[in-house]
Length: 147
Length: 413
Image (cartoon, rainbow over all chains, first blue to last red; front, side, top):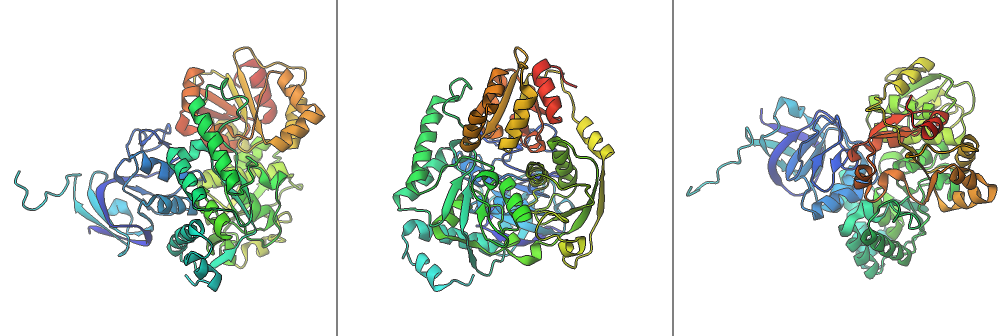
């Protein structure tokens, strides 16, 4: 099994390294918005960078200010490539759409059954599909690579 | 989405480029949530300041103002990140203050009324039952949906601004009857004599049910709660649980009975809150290294009655040397607090009153924490205790009078 169906999705097709969280997320409560590192003490991903990652979070946490935060971190070039939520809220969606960051909600099966942090995945919002392209975070070798 | 002729005209540029861009953005958001159409809104409350928006947001705002963006309905602003009278002493950046002034001027050009308050529902605008509005922050939304029976989703800054420009919002979430029904019941068999207790209820219920569409139905409480109590309950539910609505049987307009609040649903769970669970929650906060030099009354801003209560508690006392106590409120409440002597009582005690801001969104807060060697933050607000974590404070929820004692003694307990 190497794919996940999602219920709702927005954005362009993206590929990147997965970060899978067992804890919910807010770019305001949990994230240092100058480095892109999760800094909330005790967060299960404390110390983890989400820059250019495809982030899997079970839930969204409060926070209207998240709506501007995604645009801000995208502009600072420390945004994740995509946000994959089990359950999200309107702020995350409004913020991600505003920043042009792909976002999805609802997953089957649960990501923990399919992939791990470090795997290379593709998010296809149009097809409402997330696929694992390569395990262990190794970027797929481009064909015809001269080395 | 189905668009009315008016919406098609907006999309065709009939109301200008800024409105066209706003509606395009709203359609994308509406599509995500499966909205069939738009609903007109009568009032918008938006978050917009330099701390949350950053340079990118300010540039965006200036761009839209230049494209002729104008609000079509009454639009107010949420608490912001600077009180200009205090920003130098608070160690905030002069450069950011310049940008904040520019941001405020840009909002005013767009006809935004810069009230700078997160308690608009107590001081500015009280929507009626069934009225569609587009509000943020989360505390304002949950109050609108629950206490007034108005209808709003969490509308983040860009979404609220878009609603202000187009006069409508996509119909999903709490605009629809189906999402307004209770999903589980919470029996309140506790005294809940302090605002911190109500925040603790919000923490207990919110943390265990992190879901925007989870709607708790409170019942069994021995008296009618006051507005400030419902405010702290709602703010904490929204903060810990990302919730947008609750019912309170016999109190909120869509909950004449448990059955009516559940709207035919079967409660998925029955939660019981007792004095013991509240005490356990309050005692669960780590005292960290024992340093208690920062006490904050903010998040949400203080109402006039909260100001009065604090003035009574602080009267004739002094903040401990080396400690800092900060109270935030809006300009209207502060003006009245000055008239009634509450502000003087607080300032005589050494309390810093900040106007138009909320502590957790203060510009430069992390460096401010480091410069002041603050490690712990004590507050009677469960919301602020929850949300300030990214600034690496250890936070401690305590009852209002205990917070005042801690501010005056410097001793945590």
